[in-house]
Amino acid sequence: MIGEQIINLSDRLLNMQESATMKMAQMARDLAAKGHQVISLSLGEPDFDTPKHIKEAAKKALDDGFTKYTPVAGLTELKKAIQIKFKRDNQLEFDLDQIVVSNGAKQSIANLCLSLLNPGDEVIILAPYWVSYSELVKLAGGVPVFVSASIETDYKVTATQVKAAITDKTKMLLFSSPCNPTGSVYSAEELTNIAKVIAPYDNIVIIADEIYEYINFTNKHFSIGSLELIKDRTVTVNGFSKGFAMTGWRLGYIGAPQWIAKACTKIQGQLTSGATAFSQKAATHALLADMGPSLKMKESFRERRDMVIELLEKIPGMKVNCPEGAFYIFPDISNYFDCSYKGMMIRDANDFCELLLQEAHLAVVPGSAFGADNCFRISYAASKEQLKEAISRLAQFIGHLN
Image 1 (cartoon, rainbow, N blue to C red):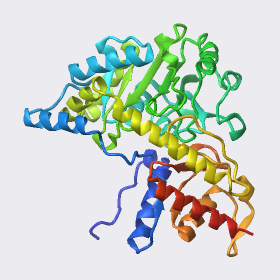
Image 2 (image 1 turned 30 degrees about the horizontal axis):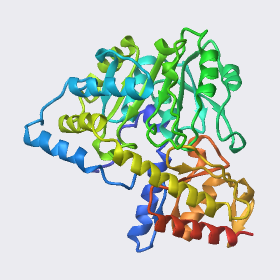
Image 3 (image 1 turned 45 degrees about the vertical axis):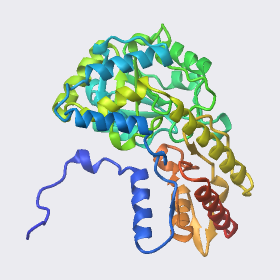
């Protein structure tokens, strides 16, 4: 029969979990296709357009004929701009051969996992964590080791917890700050304490995902790689999707020890080769031009955060903290477990979010996808009007729980 599956899929694929954010977004689209007015707060994508001056740079690059293959590790001019940015914003100094440009920060992290991990190697992941971390680690044969924090500590893990998780199999520490999904921002003191724990272990590499760097409401972003005691074993991951509203441009990058950068270039050379030529020209302009549009986006996100938190705090039983970065809020909804909605039981965050979508037509992502079973993630990368309506639907839904 044409189309019948006669060859088994790989164990690698079968053991991989589908991205929960993508799954929830698709469920929302399917419901909207049936004529329902769905509000989706599930994807981590800025609702702003890419700033005009960046788009103009891409158009010029196209007109100038930048449509060919690029070097695997990135255009030299973009790597020079990244080098300037690292020193200017992060007090990080890298040679050009220590910088690798990829097709998004996700590929950067995949390159690192495939370059550094052997089967059985352990990776300490600070939880709650971005959905793809654990799956990328497992794809490379590694073993995720989750070290978790709750809303009571603003979802931030302590150095003591990290130390307790280290074994003779630990190869990597992986985290984001500002954090997806919690919006938490680790302070210089907190990261210094973690660095002191890792420093004695020469075999552990730190992967710091700083993709939300420019959406930091503390105005005190700190890069752990700037610390002398562990800078030679730290990889800083960043990109253009969030701070420049360039999600569809697919550009990420790392600054890393030269041997790691070389390894990632080798992996990428076989998987995708270099990133899009005209996107890299636009990204070069983005890093060196006026940062005003990015700062305006950040202030808009801050206003939305404050508004959503104020509305959420009015809902009985909702536990909310005040995240200091990114564009997410991560409420604890455990008070609603063992309740029912029209006779349907809510046992966990998965039940809560699925019912919320089906009954209130509001899409959010259950915390189980991020290693936090008691929570769900709200992306407030939406208009104030949409956000007000979304929280109104959430409050009405909760008001009908028994």
